[in-house]
Amino acid sequence: MEKRYIIGIDQSTQGTKALLFDKKATLMCRQDKLHEQIIDTQGYISHNPEEIYENVISVVKGVLAKANVSPEQIAGIGISNQRETSLIWDKNTGLSLNKAVVWQCSRAEEICKRESISKYADYIYEKTGTKLSPYFPAAKIAWLLENTDGVKEKIKNNEICYGTMDSYLVYRMTKGQTYATDYSNASRTQLFDIFNLKWDEKLCETFGLNPHNMPKVMDSNACYGYTDLEGLFSEPVPIHAVMGDSHAALYGQDCRKKGMAKATYGTGSSIMMNIGDRAMHSKNGLVTSLAWGIDGKVDYVLEGNLNYTGAVITWLKDDLELIESPADTESLAEQANKNDSLYLIPVFSGLGAPYWKSKAKATIVGMDRTTRKSEIVRAALECIAYQITDIVKAMNEDSKIKLSELRVDGGPTKNNYLMQFQSDIAGCDVLVPNQEELSGIGVAYMAGIYTGVWTNEIFGKMKRKIHQPKMDQKKAKFKYDGWKAAVGGI
View (cartoon, helix red, strand yellow):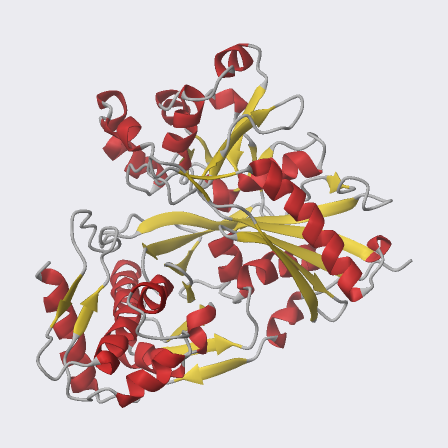
């Protein structure tokens, strides 16, 4: 039977998706399944790894049934994952030893504050391109090792594995045959030397990890082994792509050349620029990571992460009850007073890149007696574009490359007002694809290319709507200067 289908698995924060593509790289259908968001009385945010693994099996079964495709026709699988979510598991059974610590969770803050670790803050930045933070897996795994029953004995007997969700899923799917991660995920652990491309022994030992027991770091397009997915496939299928979700979206957006960039509009946002095969430290509050490794060659990225972009729209709807649906924001923004100069600064959990003001509070600036619902809604939309423009300008300055276009994805990109305003304020074309789920698409494309089902020509399949700057440049500068002044005042 001809193997002509590819499955992209996107294991994300809220749930797991399986995307099924045919021989022409057309998305046939998808299957989604949510998993529980476990939040305890201390505010710790966790996931159940066993539930997530079961959901992977479920969505793959579901997508095959929905499309009426035989498992024997699957040529390969790609996996994208929520990047910094961290876990530990038993090397013999493959079962998790505790709940996974979700990337949003800051329970490891105390670990980062320890003098034995904080004294290496400069070294961490020098080697990893990231600032010491409980956001990254190094501190999260250290917390798990200190707070999980029975771990010391397992460490002593070399019976423990640790890593990010990609490593765990590959380990389970290959029945323990592959203990590995890819360059994109390794670069986000705060344990990997992104310049010399190896686990840093000093950092591993500083956080209490055995540097000789780390997952093998492989090219993103490597074969990670074969899976029968608990008996679903009578003939095991190769896992031929692994990437962190944002990196996979960069690849899916065809930002494979130096100077190309994408912005993902989700609950928060990840803005990434491909800076080629030479790393640099940002001077403007961004982080440096590896984009991917392909055929023995790595590319690097500059990245800025924002906490509140799409979540601002959720706040308008669920908390303020100003809108019934996210779709309402576009018409309300168009109705707002065009001379109004309201700015909403959504610092609900600190101000991230490129400002890094952890103690800042959210605020509205410029309100007067004529301010109505429509002006507040418009300010909420515009703050998304302003924040992303902050990152774009920092990237332009660091890389010495002025972006001519920004490729975007995510739910809010359906909003024409937001996309046009983004183009006007950032001063570049904004390209909106006709497909969603770029993370799953990215790993599916990679798996399809490197299993020989497709060629690089598939990148030309994606169609894009282009928003070009229309606002007078002086007006755009005036509005952005107002934003900078408002942010500077908090």
